[in-house]
Image (cartoon, rainbow, N blue to C red; front, side, top):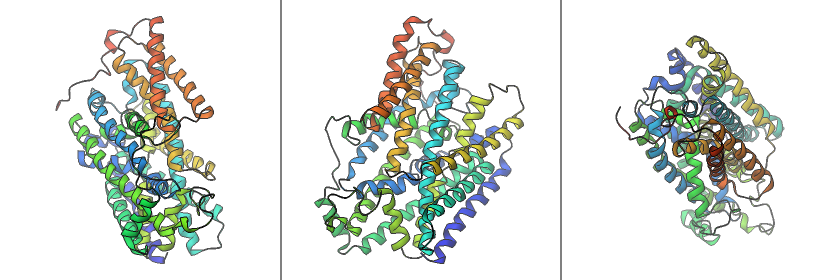
Length: 507
């Protein structure tokens, strides 16, 4: 990489920070800070959803999945479930989000069940999101460290990764601290264009660098089964099968896009449920195309590095000659991309990393956890607390990245398994509130707590694939809450309709 690449990379980081600071002048109320005063157009929300899903983890890890020995396109089975989940959310959840002036999705749980359920769900979200996004921050830092080491080959790699984590984390904190949710969404619109351009540029360079070009790459891909798409086996321990993808992916999306503040907050930035639904469904089509593209980049990397020509290939680690699949794409970018284009692709990775969750975590912490303890304060007070918590959670994510920096598995699987572990009980209680109208707070709380315990056991003591976690977690919550409801007084009639499906209208 050349000096031009560094100028592009650091110019982007500085630009993001300045952009967030500029947006800060508009943040006068908590509604401005968390929801952009509900005036964001649906197409910007759609692009923001895509940018949120296509994080640094996606940009780096998905090509590594296809590159690794035995890797293929079967990850797309999970994406098919993502599409189905979007349809379910549009019919089941989104209309209820526009009843009243919600700031967080967990306020619906307060109306339906009471404060204890809301606090538990909000707390689980805060924990899960900080861990998952700490992992994402680590991946971005690995890329920045690789850029620096390409200039200083003798540098201490571990020290550079630590410094990169802190640098990128600070930039993310400053940007979100000042800009709020509206700045996050508009930057994500820009980011989507940047990393689509970066991915296309990388694919073009790869094709031109492979002896035999695209034809040779597809030949190698076919020879080693890289284009295999469907696996109809019923194994609960295989991560990517048709059934785990369609069912597990559907439930995973119902949780992440339907009951997770990180994405639901984007719907609430529009003023009508119909716009939110259009944004969500549009994002699904874009995401499918993106995942196909990133997996194909993995095939191109496989043809470029041709690890199968080494005699150690069949017995070496799956990502041979790399320690992990997440290291393949960054290596190509920093070592083989032409000057200028390399800077663009690295900036694209930073773009994905700047899809910050800090504002969503702060919104949840303030509205669902802090306000009940400090009620009847002014909106200016809550806005100040929101800024403070944005800073605090940013530091926490930096700490998570530092703590897990020596992990060797796929960061995509690690992040999604953590999210799936906790999202199941949360989705389950939303389903309880929607379909089991007689269930009151005590049985719903019992269902969530039992589900958390069961999922922890599954995570630590079984080989069940993480793609089933949300389905199992929500099913346990649902069944246990239903059984426990017979021992408690039914929910009051006034609360039963809070999560009931509703017809989408323009009002």
